[in-house]
Length: 175
Image (cartoon, rainbow, N blue to C red; front, side):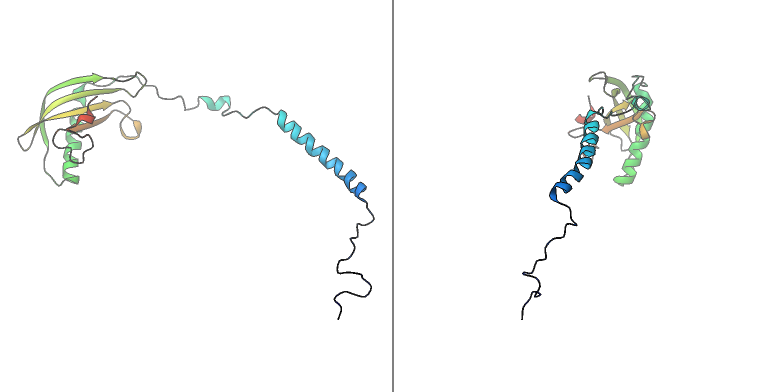
């Protein structure tokens, strides 16, 4: 039994090019190749893309503009009192609260470069509900409130930094 038909001399049939020769094939590809080359040449001559158009350059993206207009140290004490009481009650299951402050004074104002976020660093002595006086180191931060609205306050009560956020002995809360 033969695998090929009797008329054919092998298993591969001769290719039928439809009467076109290789020269006709090459000449028919010249026009698309010329068009592609022209398109690529025009793309190469196009100007580079800009990062932003003139309307986008300063549209709500002007960057931080700080005034350095921070309130005095006493303005942050009420926030410290409420935040401390909430933290003690919520996280440490403690009824410890700050009952009063004395010796409130500024320790530094914008101690770093002038283009950093303005901060006023302060220290105060606080009397707690357990009868022990403790030092409180805090900073009032411009645009440091919720969603960067208003002034924010970061503080640390020496001896009660239980999660060690400003350890050792609240040193990281100082300038």
